[in-house]
Length: 93
Image (tube, rainbow, N blue to C red; front, side, top):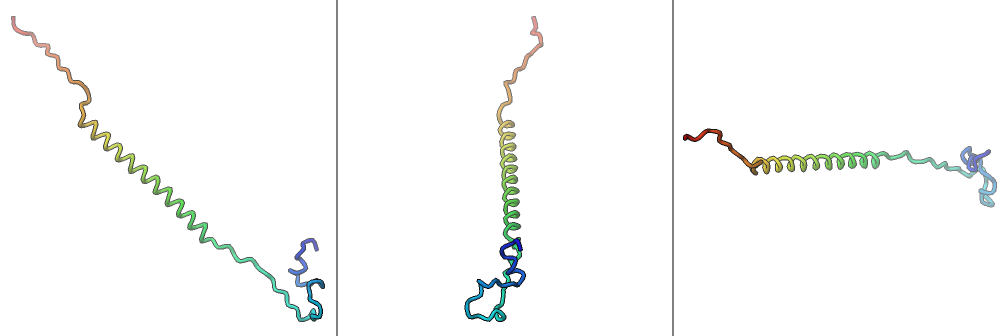
């Protein structure tokens, strides 16, 4: 067998693992099985990251809207340029 623990997985108990004075017929081999992976952590982490990125984008949109409305209000209240009126009417002689 190529894998070191293949004998134990097959149910064969090597003689050096049995304590002295123990009847090999009374030895019970307990196989350890890996616990199935719990996906709760990665799923919650993904949802939190997605929610955080959506929150950042919404905050940036709100700040852009406030900046645009402030710039519009300032531009409407401030004089946009110097007005110049030219009168072309002739004055009487």
